[in-house]
Length: 549
Image (cartoon, rainbow, N blue to C red; front, side):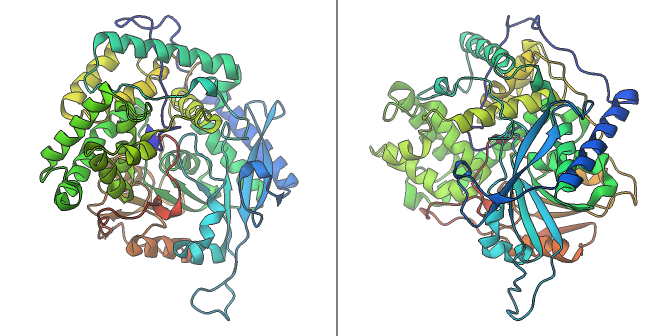
């Protein structure tokens, strides 16, 4: 699924013929049962035992991490292939800030340490190395008092055995088109791009690329737990992080102490990942409507229209002008759509996006160029896109015939045109993926096997639609769901909603949960023309965790 920050948020690829299956369409691997499952379990146990003995040698973080001197960094070794635990090893980078022990309510009281809280921000393709910095934010100080805050870069990400599918210098984009209803010739171009991208993943990263998947991310998490000296894991995953967190809960239920699933991916095997992307595209249409309705309510500030339809007309006018003459030679229709897709993730972006659109239509393109012209070649962005593609393509079978994609998304675009086709181009390399795919694990736990877990969800979240949270709760026995009603920002834990944070704090600090489900009123709507926003919980929007999270 496509997730936030379009960087990293995008991926494109191709097909041999518009109506035929690719000659190289790789088959799906059989279910991991029998000897294979036994070998994987054995390999994980071997790696975890090795990590327990070795631990992690934390020291000063290197300049390359961009992290401040107060944090500590280290590495943990995991097998590339868990069926061969003594074979090739890869190193995952890890960051940590020790529990402060400071009681925010009583300076004389020392808060007991509860262990490590490991965090993943989603993606696939996002790094959590910055997570320990959360401890300085007011919303996180109580948690930071009791826990070491631990972040890490999953396999393939950043310096953790990084993947690449394309020369970053060739990833410069803009201006570029983004047709709402693409022509047959445009579809052929994008099919060819997708095929070339898929080939590039194999050429640049080799056969090892098959080992970059969500099940191995879950196994890596258990090795990290062991390396941290934790008998049981306390974990918080956002967006895509909820999916491999759910895999972890299924594979290692007795290793779970507490788990928070923030903005849950629908884990049903049949949803991974093709159907989830269709659902995501449909949900973004609702968030796009929310943004336009908000903008219309503030027409006195923006002058873009007094109804959602009038705001849409203003947006389409800008699209047409940018197609004819890109702003600053950098911003075309695709860059415009990308900037407003970010607003679909986080409503904190609404004031600035509306202001930029208004200014552009009044003759000042500078704010729009500033917000939408992501044209620099970036190793990090290319890496995030490669990991996103590899993990999602490896995780599950995808349709290998273009006519299936074309049929499903042509129908969907009639009622959800805003994001549908861009989501297709991002994921289309999976139709031509050159290595065998996994079959998704059936996420499910029996009563009493898994410690109670907490699910957080915004009712109108588009990146991970609300049905995913309901499905995850059905599958994890004893889990509790807290809903931010009527809200749609992606990732709500540690953000501005005090009700949500009270449930999060109570669970992580005391293990206390509400009943089966609880509701929180929505956060306040953003003020028009507000300051530059931060993403929820102080985190920056991450890579295509846009489209999975």
